Image (tube, rainbow over all chains, first blue to last red; front, side, top):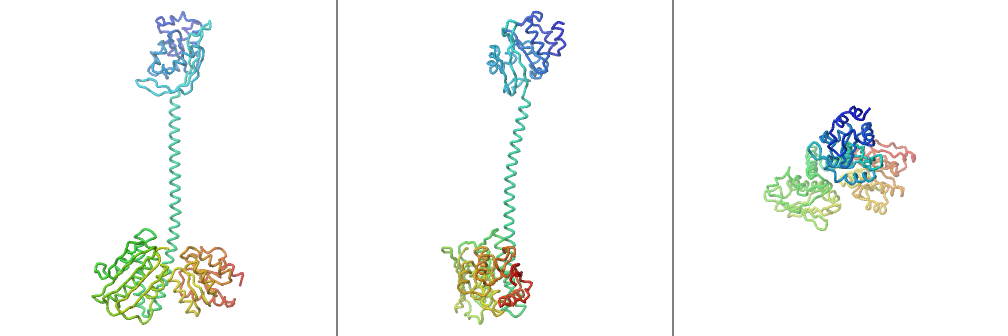
Length: 379
Length: 138
């Protein structure tokens, strides 16, 4: 069987090859082709993978059907054309390899990146291929045979996968950071809750003590209820200042204003409040609230605020971490020292000063009651 | 009894002091921190002590309890959270949970007074949680 008959059955490129007018090329009519070329074309058509061969001084191109997908719109014009014309856009890159093969050194490339012009645009593509020299019967190199795979899809898939992996890693890192933050928040929450539970229990203990202690000094149960209620309200006012501050510290101004508000209109001007802005912890804030409440109710009942002319100056200053708070009543009726020590006096002189690790002095001088509280501003 | 009160909440210390004195005992010192408490123990040689765990300088009531145990001075812990007391109560007779009632304190005081006097037949009141070690002594 002649080679032309054989090749006509080798698919699209086989038919095209035998119908091509080779007389216009350096290869000449098929009938005149050397047996070494015919043998190489047979190998090419028998190959199960994409293959081309280029022969003669013009390196005219022949290829099998498997190679068509790599050519895109370069097929069918590529068949018979010069290799350098078909792949002109990458010729600079492959010329050294072509020259090497023609000089007897075949080459093997893996994932070689090439910008190819296909379907009307430049495209980044990747190829793995071998160039092997083709010799005539005299051993002279007359052409090149090439087995080739295009790796573009695989490279892009790998790149996608790498990008996904990177993204996944970033997401995992971000999740780990988020998880650590949440864990820390939960741990903080546990501490806050424990502290809250402790403070709540302590509040109940304080309330319980206020009730029993007040009961020691007040015999009439209706009076006792009023006194206990008012003292608990003073504690509650301090608690409000604590909650408003959103932390374990309260503003002294707020504590005093909250404590006085149920009893005295702050705009009446009968209590003049002056002092720098300072923060107190919960214990000290509660202490000030109790003290100011006791002083104010006493002043309203018996002291300066029981008359229209009386006034109170409430002031404080801080020096070297020592806070000095002074309650001074003026313009009231003549002061008489109380017959017996009440729970209010106990609070002012024995209890509240302990919160400040300091001292509380209550003075019933005739011109007006004064109370001086001095102690550390913080622990 | 000469009683030491270790409590950083002055209101509660005052109340406890009142109950102790009302029961016929003498409060010889009040401490709100470890250093003051240890000095009071050395200077006043109390017969008995009430010890809060959480003081102004932290959970130092435990250290104060150890010191009392070393000197064989009987004591009870008074705490808002009995779980904070170490296992074995570091030698305390027991613990009273806050907030306590006047009755609870009175009953506990009566039992503790009997105990210090060596009256082992006395039954502990419900307000007093006894240390597991204490049963060994009894």
